[in-house]
Length: 501
Image 1 (tube, rainbow, N blue to C red):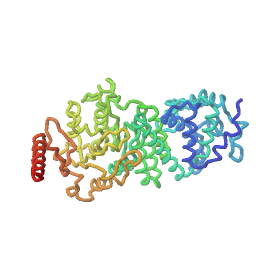
Image 2: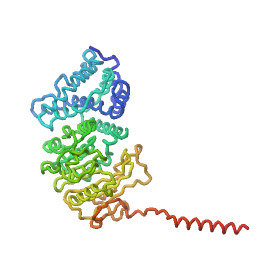
Image 3: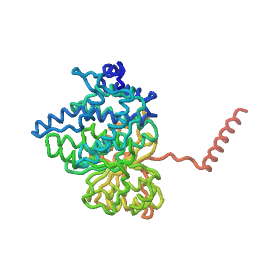
Image 4: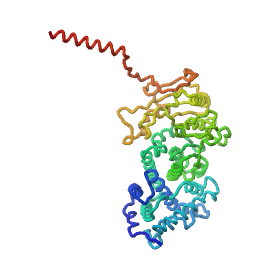
């Protein structure tokens, strides 16, 4: 049996700082032997290791909870799959027992041929979709171990070992660091950016939606789980000292969907680190659901989402919707409207071109939105809010239409600030908007805000283009006006030259 090198535990002893550990892990994953080719792979491989470290670290707390409740305790994982058996068999002082630890090819063989297959089978044997075993099986069903060097894997494990999850403060630190890694993944390029929505924007949207304990919350395009995490964080304080409310939050409140394997895994991990331990996130195409068959039981009270855009929908998904389109954002908007209960509310990010596109599908979906729902606010965002450089709006609406009252618009244009990677969007940037939505201040006195009477919309196009009447756009002179100006300039110059004679 291959044994770990003597230096394997040295990196763990060198740092107890989680941020430094994550940075060191990324540096190791950059090396040959990790099987990783970029930031997305780093996220995937470190996530499954972090998840198993978390499950093991929480076992003692679960044991204590069972004992206090007077119920028998059963570990989540069988002994041979626990972190302390295969990843970090420890001596009494907590250091690695090199005589019992797997390394090299033996470690890789165990992880690939025993650990992963065993964890994938958890889904088949789970008692329900809201169980921890179902979550574990779902996660490992979408993953594979990409390491090709068992000694490098041992070094990454050594860096994972000191991470702590015992207290709420420690788990909060981990969730913050995980969010930072998700943000970095979003900055890594197009593939990563599709999963990440600026958390400052999500928090403002969630505060405006204000979901309550007892209401259901859904994000059918959940990406890395930002809306689910922030909605849970918004609601958990009200349930902290109420066991029944806490059970409702954990088991009956949140649902989501994601079609990309890496995003699905990061969403599960992100929710767990935020304290939502059994999020009901479905893996697969949300748009495959037949919205015409939705019953009241399928619908939810609150939706927050940033659906993908582009011509990515297949023919089978398009057929599920009354308004066909290859543009996924238009299908998702129809899905969200159908998913809301009567009186439910939503905040949806969508490309700003949705407000003005003249194609049949865009006009028909705008009509559906205005007839079925009350469009209350449109928040117009500048281009650099998102890594991909897309200009977007946030639609705030409730399903108690039609839209008869004036639609309120707010255009956020940062004065003297260049948004981007170095200066991301902050919650304070949207403080004025949030105050106006909550009834603070006078919208009529705010140059960034205005209203549009739905009765004045062109009935043929229902164009909702962002046109701030409080901003006077600089008009370029016409060709005739430029010609007159040139002639006047030359005439004045001629008079000056005449005076020099």
